[in-house]
Image (cartoon, rainbow, N blue to C red; front, side, top):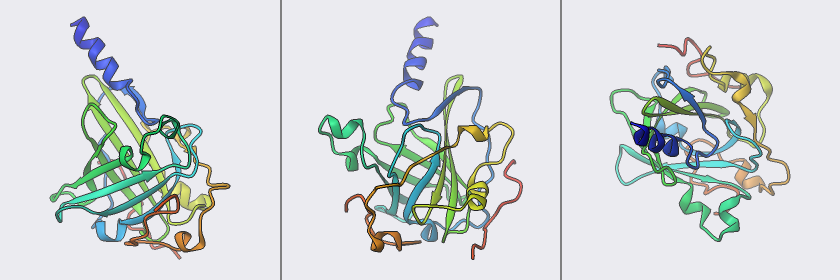
Length: 217
């Protein structure tokens, strides 16, 4: 039993990319109604997440090998991986598998994660300006949480940030930490990329909210 506990603790405390590690089960989060993955795809700037000292983080979502699979490329301006000569583009790639029965709910598998996939739920978005996503992974008696505020531009006004945060009693708003996009050298062409854009992202290579109601099922 002690061995099992040690293995579990080692798994949940392995490189977690800023995830919060908590006791208990993953919360059930209500997804955006009639979620459209085609509109959600393209270039996003990560404005807030459960992490410290992040900067110049972008997501680029594109179609995968079949209609139910998508690829998420997360890029950062700097980081530990670059200092040891590893390819960040490769190591920060995730595969997204949609749940056909629940649009807005998906399984996301990061290559760096040694203990399996996360459930990711897009709980708010207007597709053209902002989005809010919540990831959670169950590991034995623990859960690993990550929440992300996304924007189609490198900045996002405060009212849209508030819409993109997950408003629940069991998700503390202070977990959200800002991601700096100052001095990232983004080009105007990249900043204008939006929903469904094929733009690879700047580091290489009025809103109509879909659903801001009750996020709790």
